[in-house]
Image (cartoon, rainbow, N blue to C red):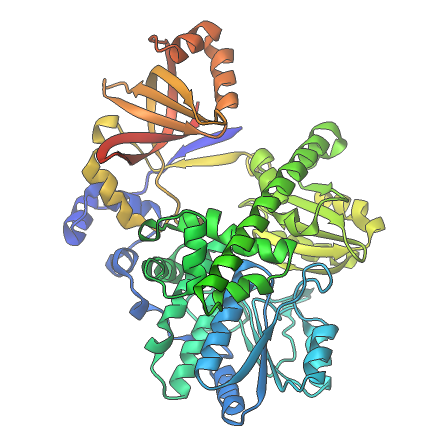
Length: 586
């Protein structure tokens, strides 16, 4: 089920267009993204790295940088402890490069997903202590490690936390009481009383700001480490941060730098996955490069992805890139199998009636639980937790919908959990196996989602006749990039669209190429990807087999639909043609 909603946000689009040398239509699209006022529009269209916020505004940043300066100057041994996902890997790399480049004695460790679990633990701290490490710097973890950090402090370790996750809290009589870990410095834009203007950074972006601040306190040029912005961009997209405000600048600037990256590992991975470095988009990070980097932490060790970023020769980089691609191909196969099992459980058991889906897949590799949860959420548009057997008890990963704050809801169930963390849209947890059913019940008993909340909303920017789809307009739309969560591709709609004819393409027969005509009589090519069988079944149910056969045989059909779409240029053999990509239909 879908609910189509047409945005109707007002503004003087002609004046905005004239002021910024864009079309009124593009001005309307920018307003639809809640970008209001000349300063915000200018930042949206022209924001550059020089307009990033001052990292020293972040609570704990100055203290953390001064402490690191002291440790570097004293020659103390520093260890970065990151996380095994794309954000943690890039954050670790950024801090390694920055501290090493500023003269620090630094190394790193990354927890093993299966044996260590997420974040700091006693083993990692004891190992650091025994190896003569003086200072631990966390990245993309640590904000919820109150007990572990207290233990590390008892060993005499100096600990600096850099993180971006929600600060743990307890509900008191006067509201929330936040529990910060007892580290020597805590840097997290989500902590209370932090004056940093933008709290939506990923862990790698927080790490990048720490490196820049450290440069300032040590009297070095920040431009020396500007190349690390490309890693912050990869992490921002890969960790599915909202592409707004400062994140938009990070990704836009990072993508520009990535096209000419000097990082041998990134160059090898781009080549290995057959991407064109001059045409990289946020999409390619999210769906090609990112999954390869994540696969190392899922099926092997994240240290392999970190080694790729640190590769010193093309031979080493090519080998590691090939390994990561092979791991990701294996991960895809495992995911498809687990998704099929999860769907079967939802369709055949009582959990189909639940508002919050808790799916127990004992044999699912725990590293892909989050991916499976995301795929199931897409199918049923409900919050989803996928639980699987772990070394001790059960581990789970959750993916949410807009109306459901996953971390807050987990906090209500914390009496059943041994460990949990995350944010609004995603979370991880551990619990004893015998408590899994009670966890499912409690989540659903607490759930206040309405049917409207669980009906996917398709937000349409504007109705757009096909005559308005011109090469100039399509090229102008690139000013809105990068696209992703928080800055989605514009959605255009057309009613009473007649499908003239069509044919199925692709070796897997998963592409439909159509010729369509709108109510004003303009004809254009249209593409529909992936769910072709489902689309054709709907057409047969509504219009009959004869009309669908006529369409596929190249004969004129009587099929008429309402469509949402995105326009693009099809460039083939030097010839450029206009086409639309159908995203939804009614």
